[in-house]
Length: 334
Image (cartoon, rainbow, N blue to C red; front, side, top):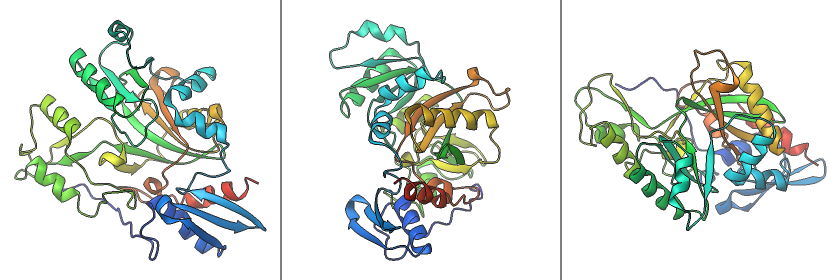
């Protein structure tokens, strides 16, 4: 008994080895009958010719449309915080840790907390809704395996949305629902995961990735007094982790027509704060029933490599064909 999904991604024939976002951009280049060259397939690096000029595109969206400094700012989560702060954009209270930090600095951030490396992506080593100091220390130690700087922030409850901003216009919004399963009254969580994983990829050649039952999932289930062997009642939905990255098995739900303009304006201002013309802006909205306000959201981070496939091939919802706007932005960058 699964929610009805209209997910219908089919790899682009001849280009299946590329990440899904790059496949989508190549499909748009082919539609426009533009000359292009594959420079390095393993690195999703292509060039396209337009009006006697060459445009290099990496991973579908990294191009001259964004300046080097804008890309650099967004690539460092702590640096991003400085630029959001300059524009008065609301974010969680946070501190930066470096190796050898004094334990008492953690008192500045009340529990529950979030721990994340300062310069990784795809949700790597991110731990959320941490309830105890022991758990927090373990999460920090894990994050230091991936970065020499670690951010500790206040945990903000709510739902996280990805706003795709192209040339300072919001073109699509996806709610990335954390990895979850829906009970059928007879299957274990592990069996439900195996069923849901059918049709999903193990890498970014697919918009949706398989759910992997890792340490964070085990920890999360333990907090619910569950294990992968627990059988769920029919209709019982269980979230397997808090962070909603598609790379960790989350679902993309298109909500472009449902989000108040207040938050789309916040997303645009967040992109402008770092000068990003192509950006995925992650925003947590605490309570959608509340009147939209400064206190009802936080901007989590800015992403210069903006994943397009979640907006064209959502688990549930409409294909927004965002590649049209992205390619226009790139081809108008010189």
